[in-house]
Length: 550
Ligand code: FEO
Ligand code: CA
Ligand code: CA
Ligand code: CA
Image (cartoon, rainbow, N blue to C red; front, side, top):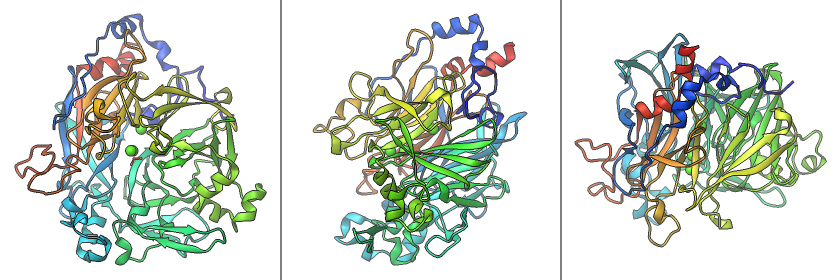
């Protein structure tokens, strides 16, 4: 029932038409010998590590910015800060060069956004103004922008009626029958890190480090709660419960309406990667990016639902998916009053069930050829894992709703493979794996850390075919202090949309920024989304060529 149909060409259009290949297929069996030869002989000249303040790309690639922080998207709205996940949905599958780009705005650097310097104060959250907090709340969430490719260049369609912002003040419904902390509609989304796409062509945006905005509710052994304050101190002005954040959020591209999917649990969601079973039930993988937290999978019991179903957490030692099911798990019944509480306190529930602690699960992708699931484990310094790894999950019999699986390390970070701290993943149409890295700004290029040799964060590719198959090759290098995030291919596979997040993050004085990328006249660094194109992508990403050949 839940098996991927590996024996037939079944790549669901919802994924391929949006440039994402997150679904198994054996389309690739149709590769002609000529094309295979081309790939076999493809030489990719990788970049060496660099600490240059620029976005460098390998030979055969070039880039241009599409949109930057502060750019107008309409008469009333501007593009937010620290862009992360990107995702593109064309209006018409037959015209994939015109559609809607979704971009996450994960967090703000107050020094740039609200002119507030946290380092000046011992207790900064007590020194904020509501105007500063309002600016910050506006600059997180996400953007919907219509983009169009003309003469090979993607451009924003300014003032298109679809262009809009979702912010930390946008009202958002909860997709749940029971109110959460007294509400069925909550205010805003923030901490939006990575995301995904649904089969019904809506955007998914995931709330990750939500405790940075309104803090967190903590429980002692007697279930007595205390409020742990946030570092941004928004709760000094807006009394929004922490329980309203830490969810998977779905956004309708057409009108910007959004909903939070409670059934997928509450934790620091990095991403949500969806597979649609043949009977239209949904499987959604999502990781909790925090030291010693977990990997989860939701399996719906109804078609096309992100509400009815069961949330599981991974025991990677025994290869088991453990159900966070209050009704059928006595250990959860003892601790929590109902399923809603289990979902709100999913981390605690997962630990009670014996879930395996992982080294910060970040992005998740499904190999379009084998159906195996790949999970970035970025690092866990508390366990002396400095460079992270990529975990491979093989569901039993290739069934995505299976309750058992095999886990193994696909690729370890470190000197041998030339990358450290893997974060975002993307498969292209040919099944090459693209990886971005996230060495933290405080460690990057620092002599006394294990990260010195890796220099600036980068984009890597692991080719599937040819002489370099399986090697990790650096193909782009980020500006100073930045992280490359949100890789997403256009439907024809010829453009890689990529976010450049937090260039100049280590800046202490705006007069002396540590980065000036993208080299605007004001000399201030700005997060931006770029389009990467070029011969190398076109040669590697060949499904489109195959289609025209058949
Ligand atoms: Fe926002 Fe886990 O990266
Ligand atoms: Ca990330
Ligand atoms: Ca991804
Ligand atoms: Ca990260």
